[in-house]
Length: 114
Image (cartoon, rainbow, N blue to C red; front, top):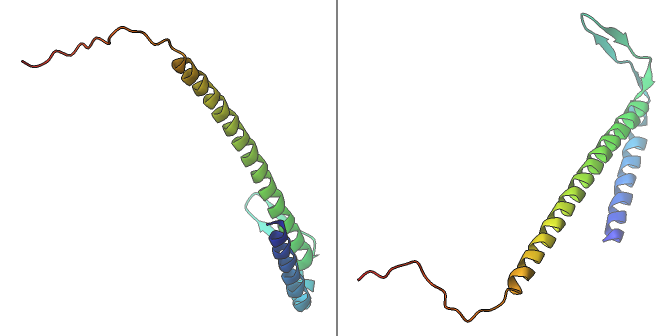
């Protein structure tokens, strides 16, 4: 499974490199970002599209990583709670199995319809 994952990652990286080389001219252009609101006016310095693409990728990786870490901690907590519940149920089951068997008959509160 690890080999298959590594092959997919290598193919994806190769695809990214091919796209970047074929679109070198388009990625070399510079852009500026502007925000023009009533209370805020801002303009970024000129930056290349390569820089914008790399920053966007890193923000995506960072947000996916943070989501993955929080999901992992949530699942670990859930596993801990379920393990604790299973141990409690095992104790209860063992205590019920160890109840003494008596020779007395079980008395029913149900009266037969005659």
